[in-house]
Image 1 (tube, rainbow, N blue to C red):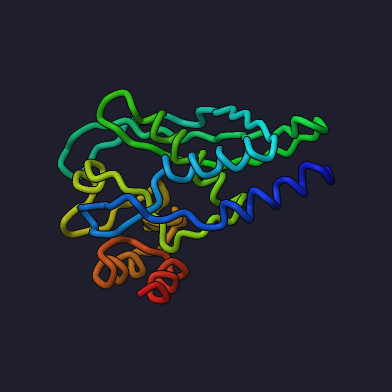
Image 2: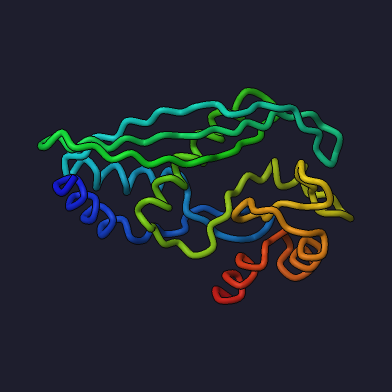
Length: 194
């Protein structure tokens, strides 16, 4: 694993930062797009002779009802990314999760894209600052006016940025302070960016 590790370090160095070129017009913040992340990573991987083989696995597909009463599909996907060194044949595998929601047939594609983007961002330690996903349609229909979006756990809610479970008190506070539901750690990160 010594040769692939050395090349992986070079990819990490070259991909250490991705600019935030996307804009979430609903919540008024910028984010690094999947296109920008994948283009930068692919350029560096191929430069160093590392092939990338992505294997997605659909973990769940369920119907959800939005705050406006519309029924949409919510997909959760795990991706396994195997990097293969073209010179030595050594391999390195990293995994990640992503969820995507859509009213037509794009939920799985959104989940795969999110999973791949965040697998590379976490594995390569890519810095962008606060980097929530932006999907104007989902944000608009899923944001209830009076109460946070509940997840499947009793009396708990989900952090908009990292997906961790948070209490109603934390969800209410972060919604009032930041305009979205954030866990304590993501609130601290948001304060340090401001």
